[in-house]
Image (cartoon, rainbow, N blue to C red):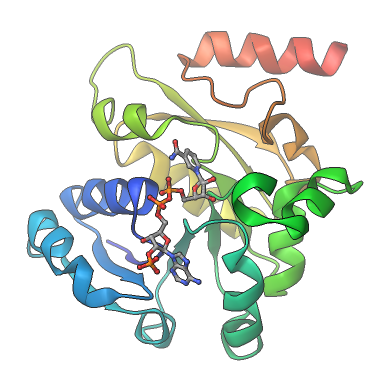
Length: 214
Ligand SMILES: NC(=O)c1ccc[n+]([C@@H]2O[C@H](COP(=O)([O-])OP(=O)(O)OC[C@H]3O[C@@H](n4cnc5c(N)ncnc54)[C@H](OP(=O)(O)O)[C@@H]3O)[C@@H](O)[C@H]2O)c1
């Protein structure tokens, strides 16, 4: 059983939190308006509650899911990275200039991957990139399958985050596919080869190999 802090509890954070609570993990949902998350926490059951972002970080969770709009990374890291930088952070965000503004365009244009930006901002050696490539609808409806499981690609910065990432993907009934370190996660970014694809593991693996041969 792990304690998981959800930072940003919308389509992605809300559904992932519900799945993890169902799988037996302790879940803390947070956003700027935690009162609005009481209903979600209630739906998720006894393993879940709604708290402020500060309370979530203070709770010293085993892992944090970052599922806010990309632009919030700047504000959240500015506020929390100093004191709470040394955390395992699962980064599900994607930079969209039309939603996130110029900073997202800069990250899109940069010679690093989106999650390397997150890792730099949070100053942590334990960043996992995962759940950013799957459509919210599939995340919601295709978890806990016994056969023909969908796979969730992930990248991780070190062994601890790799182990945690794999487990948290598999615990909710997806196959985990390890793409490599954060510097290998370019194929997961918006408009890249495996972005927006919900595939079984053989097909995903084939796409990754083709992308790397190209
Ligand atoms: N939707 C998809 O299909 C999909 C798939 C994969 C990845 N993603 C990525 O995942 C991230 C979340 O997407 P989503 O569709 O789940 O968004 P969403 O439904 O709009 O949820 C965003 C959540 O973040 C919270 N939030 C916003 N600013 C915040 C801040 N400064 N501090 C703390 N919480 C904040 C919001 O609540 P408050 O406004 O009340 O704070 C809300 O709970 C995005 O980066 C998106 O690109 C989306």
